[in-house]
Length: 513
Image (cartoon, rainbow, N blue to C red; front, side):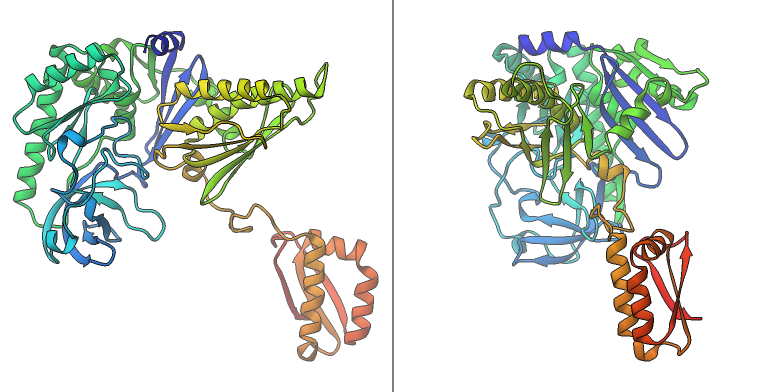
């Protein structure tokens, strides 16, 4: 814990906020380098953490789940383990205070069902639920009845009579002090998790926050009693307030925002929840856009590229699939100075640092496979692995790493915390359908010729016009002219090629002359 605190003290952090009517973008800078990025548009504001009163529309005994109408386009999905009253006894629960709403591979606490869902829920029943996972594609939102209301220092669990302390607080004396403090301040039957940031938190700071969260739940519960389902009962904080609540600590020197309206809202928020942060808030008033001034736009563009160059001249390739992320390390133009093993070691060490940084910045989670360049000596493999492991001490997301294999592979997992940067800022290419590849000019020329042969009986007798991409037309004239003439003789028609600059490379049309 002492080493971690010392490391944090070396980092000078800044929170940069670019607020516009369309969207809000937030960058966490560490020693002037972009470390984490968050954004939220007005159109696509997230609903994770929001609380609804819903109506059970269908119970599925075979899946031990239920569909619940909470007023969204698609019905939400509720597993039996997320139904109120299900789970382990309080003393057996394991808590993790980080990103309590955002994980899709690990719940706030682990639990097991005690009764089948058909005995717990009935169609038409109205229940209060919280969104645990955003709707994705054709899937509706995943919901839970295990409500959690995060504050800065604690997370309030109104349905659990238990006090938990973040596993990242390792000092036993501090854990005991915080547990006793929460026990003293909580109402009977109220559950709380003490978050990592609460280390050294005094009663004067903890008490108002706990009281606020308990009153908030009372208001939500009362509202739920007096209104029909489906309806929204409570909306989670927007991205700006969540970022300040979760990211601010004494190492954050400045919180800079470019909107006067947002500046005033932030001041009001921190005066209530984070009084120590008031002096750190600044209103940006330079003529350049705030993300340009801090060099953030360039870093964001770089974070969307598949290829990331290393300072030595080597590079890494990041490929994301549905199941996992694969990362390949290459020496590129780096040839080293002494011998091959030294060159490989230096490239791998540099890549280890960059990969850990990119995974955090891009918010990549799930299963990750890294293919480091093969190293002959075991001691070099250990050096690279240790350097890689050390870099993740800065990462708030939970990671699990396996040692480098004899093939130079590292298998790891990183806790999913919302969508990755690439998926949130990009969409699949409409031309290649997300494959990253399009058909070549030679392939398209051959396709056009085959289509003409296929339609030979339906073609006009004198002339047929083929509209195609200009590069494909140029390729046919320059490389396939002889074959074009042979095809004209075989079909007995004149083929006119019409170059269309507006056509995609895979697009063509065959018509009459």
